[in-house]
Image 1: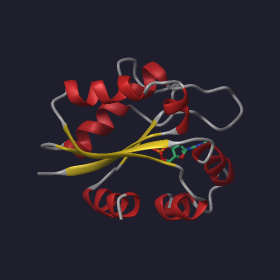
Image 2: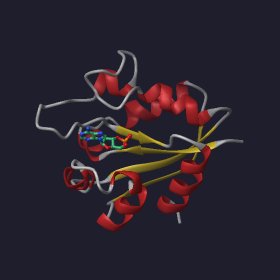
Image 3: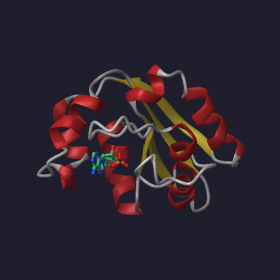
Image 4: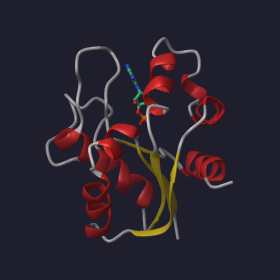
Amino acid sequence: MEQTLLLIKPDGVKRQLTGEVLARVERKGYVMTDLKMVMATEELLSEHYAEHREKPFFPDLVTYMTSGPIVAVIVEGARVIEGIRSLSGSTEPTLAAPGTIRGDLGRDWGTGQIENIVHSSDSPESAAREIGLWFN
Ligand code: CMP
């Protein structure tokens, strides 16, 4: 069965939205096969966000992602990679559709670093790589 990595980012954990996010995942019929709370290191984030390492927002992204614990979850189900991306909504909270996690709960304070609650893998290759990184 297909698997994906879902991260509940520090803003989601701090705002006590972990249960809200996981309830949406479970209500959709997906199954959590592993879950942990972890403080991300800069090294882990450099690997995880390898394609963003050279982007201007990367330093602020690291500050955001190391600002508190993250809940990392392996989620399993048919077409779960697409399914969790769809539940998450598009990257920017302002543009994410209402009804999605980011559309309903994400925040943009106008400071440049958006707070978009979750990350989810975007392809089978990313899912395998990211699950390996976060769950060894
Ligand atoms: P995520 O789905 O985890 O993938 C990359 C992350 O980088 C993204 O969510 C946002 O948290 C962040 N990000 C992407 N684009 C921007 C941007 N233009 N400005 C600030 N942060 C961004």
